[in-house]
Structure formats: structure tokens, C-alpha cells
Amino acid sequence: MGIQCKRSNLGVPTTMSAKPITTQLGCDLYDHEIDWQPFAGIENLELTLCDLDEERHVVDLIVRFAPNKTVTMHNHLAQTNMLIIQGELRMYEPDGSIREVRPAGRYYRGRTGDTHSEGGGPDGAVVFYSMRCDGNPDVLEVMDEAANVQATVTMDDIRAAWAAQQQASAA
Image (cartoon, rainbow, N blue to C red; front, side, top):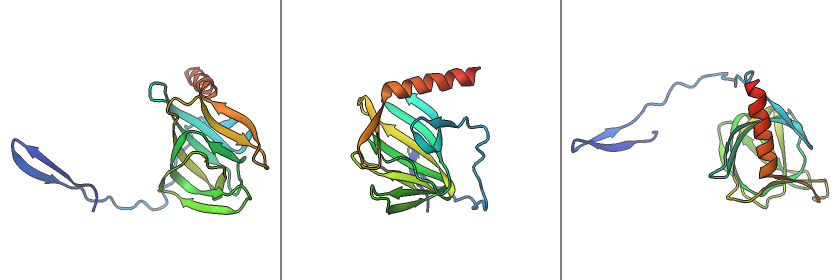
């Protein structure tokens, strides 16, 4: 099937289509060039910031989750969309029960006000996140096991992390 495009070239309607490529078996993410950094206060993951768009208030990052481990309970205060790149991402309810298993190749549109935890499956997970902050200075609440807010990650925190990452990569 694929995406089809109808376009007119000099008044002559033309239909363009594409054939799917052959599936590549055993295709793994080559992430050796990614500068993975720990996330202070959240165990069992590493991340790298891909882009900080100050004008649109969008933060893009890639997160690598440890196999069969969960991260601290948290709440996204910004619209957070994700693409599972490798492995599977497991979403957990605040009581620790599995809410959903998200396999590689799937895109999800997150929601705000959704207290949860998440973690990698048996092979871990690599996930691309795009956070749309819409001018909100607060991005993420980090919680304890009783869902009490322990820390709030802000746009200022992300700006500082972005500047440090840019400086480290320039060195």
C-alpha cells in the first residue's frame, strides 16, 4: 500500500506510489556513536538530547532503558510522543502492574497527567521521545513510590543539560 501522492505537472495529473523495501532481518541499532548520559535522580536509563527548539518549546531525546528494570515513577507535564526504536517499552501503573507492552516500530502519543513508570523488556529498549512543552516551564515530575513529587524537571534544567552536552561534544 504505502503513501500515494497525486500531483499535477504542467496540468497533467500523475499518480506517484512507492514499493515497500525488503524487510531487513536482525537489524540492530548502531548506537556506539551516541553519547549516552545518566539522568540524575532516575535509575535504569541513559539518554541523549537530540534537539532543543526554544521557539517551539520542543525537546527531542533518545532514551535507552536497562533490560527488565523500571525507572522511577513520574508524570509528564508536557505532551510526550514516542517511537519505540528497539526492544520493547513496558508501561507500569503506579501499583507496579503492567499497563501495556509497546514493541519496537510503534509510535505512541502520550498524555499529560498520567502518573506511571516504564522500563525496558528482556532486551531493554531504545525510545525516541518528543516533548511539546507549549511554553510550560515544568516538563516532568519525579515521584517516590507513594506518588509524592520529589523533584520537577524544568525547561531551565533541560537548557542547562543541552548546553553541557553541546559543550562536551565540541571538546
